[in-house]
Image (cartoon, rainbow over all chains, first blue to last red; front, side, top):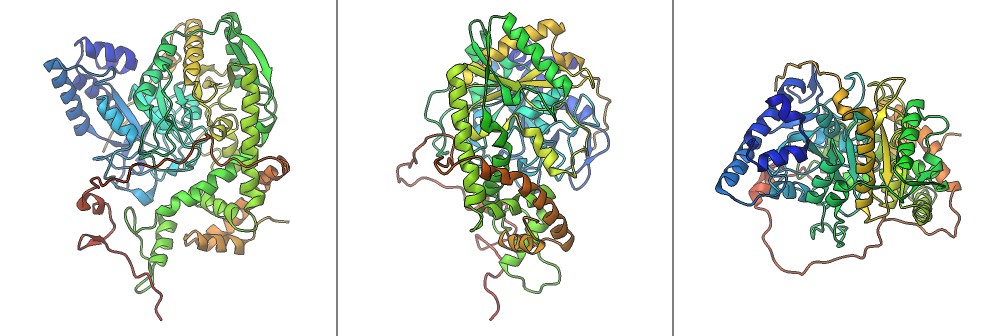
Length: 520
Length: 98
């Protein structure tokens, strides 16, 4: 019973809940049991300990069961309930949640419980989804592997010696480990899409502004966007519909209506559609793994067989996207993270050997003790890029590149309805492999960053397993701003073609996880 | 020639209010040198005629009606404070000794 419940898609689980075949408490308990069985324990400091996936930083056992019982009671009363009522979900620890800690994977926020819910979280609760807990991430979403979490790395369910992607590796791993059928991620440079690619799951970065950023702890405000993580394209669409929409609490929230992504996901079709292959991201050249390229090419062939018209487009400025991103992001981050000042919330550390220290000295000691290496690196880099004398050369030049990237997208979308590329240049790399080489880690985001710089929506979905290592590869679909429905139309069509070819979902082939002794 | 010196990193860390240890200054100076070298390529991409873009969407600023509305209870706001006293945040002294 439990096994079958955790294996269900969110869509199927929602149908069974609505039909009264299973209760929300049963569904929630099944997922909590799964988490207890495979996620592993944490030590007194909250750090991952022993074997396990370590996708969750906090599991809200009691609250989740109480919320589920409320849904069951409402259903028993005959209340009209939203589609996903009673379906469990995991939430990335960068979104503010009342009653649950929100740490952003940082020591500086250890144990902090926010006084309000992020709009995304409020919407989940209004739609009666059951929040299982908070998922691990690179500290303040800076990273591509979750290894920069102050609480230890999450492990990839496909191979627990490898990274689950990042920064939202916890959310993606929770799906691939069948600990949750749905999850929320955030994507500043690929933090939803790259983890989806390396875990064989689906992740969508909606159009910038389509999902409220209120209560999302800001990394880079002009790039951050929350979005759905799921195991199928339809499930992602159902969650997208729940979280998207205008929010007066976010001044950058789009007032435009949300496209009908669920209808698009139910009617996957590419016949007659113009699909552009981005020459600069087609998987050729150094840094791109052969198996990633092979699965991408096969997926494109499948789209052609289904009636799509393939055209090659060139986006020459994309080659400068990575450099521009690693100036814009640290610049915005250095400003956003100034709020962690040890005065109003979070950690406070007094400098050693200083009698009666000033607020500034406490601030500096706290930020030294509370931030990890990658966060310090980017704050210093951003401070440099914004300092007078360097501002125009670095930040100013990066903003011009951003204009060129937007123009490249405009030209490309004049020739094609959607664009495709591999999501990440490689499959999941071994833990520790790139930890000492920040630049090598940054290169993992080369294909996902352009969408953030331009604000356009993107989806990653599984394209298969690489021959050389048997690990999942991802294909990225990009659409014009506010045309998020195209992602789902194309994604659903491709998913159906590939699942048919594989003889079942890719995640059927994820290795059985060894039970991990949980000691929460 | 290196793009950034150890002294510059120390100055930036002071501006960013991070009390970096000496070994961190050594390491960051080297790492930032490599990273700055890579990202400096942005200077060669766009000409003077290209305008800067700071935001992905052409949005205009929005304001809400200036009407009083309830705010969070004091207890909720102070619950996460490192130290509180008399319904206020308690902070270290803000002035240098004279």
